[in-house]
Length: 208
Ligand SMILES: Cc1cc2nc3c(=O)[nH]c(=O)nc-3n(C[C@H](O)[C@H](O)[C@H](O)COP(=O)(O)O)c2cc1C
View 1 (cartoon, rainbow, N blue to C red):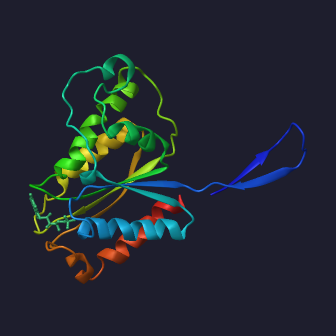
View 2 (cartoon, rainbow, N blue to C red):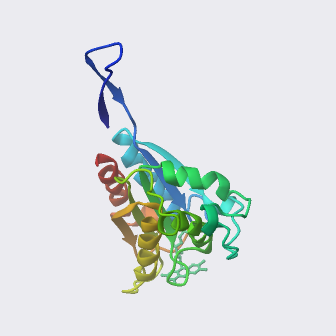
View 3 (tube, rainbow, N blue to C red):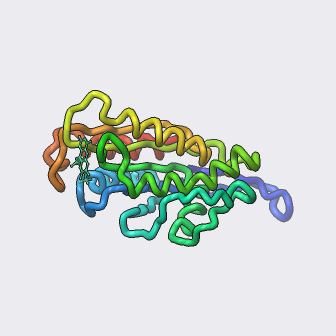
């Protein structure tokens, strides 16, 4: 993204600053280099080809407790639990693009991703209880989902959850890539279109 700024203090002309879009990927599979992880990597490659910066959160490697309904967040928008979510809240608020990538587990997001999302009740409280405006209104996000079977409603629950999550953190649900019929680790490489579709998704998101 090219941003033109005018410095009115000491210089009367205009100058340009390159500002890279920040893409945050939430990788929800416990399998590193599994199907979800490979799809997210391709989406990152697509976004990077458009000049974006990417950062992956491997949720399974972090210590994230599930929400305990202490409701401290209703007072000041901060969760009272101290764990790896402390480092994730600022990243979620700072990213220009958020990608949630998850295998479907029992027609839903993985428990790892769901724990992270539930802990964003603190950000929901900032927005809807404390009436704080999310940082940047142009933020957008996408869901990458992968599942073994062909069920028609495989992704319905996850789409609803991710839309509601994005709403809480001030991100528009802008895109999705939903892949059926892929089960074994790395089997996504044999899928005829999934990896190139992920690359294109990353490009689209970063193109604005
Ligand atoms: C606990 C568990 C639950 C699963 N539930 C479903 C399901 O409801 N529907 C489905 O199509 N696949 C289901 N699967 C299969 C995974 O979605 C599939 O293997 C996926 O490709 C795994 O992606 P990954 O390599 O990124 O972990 C399940 C797998 C596990 C381990």
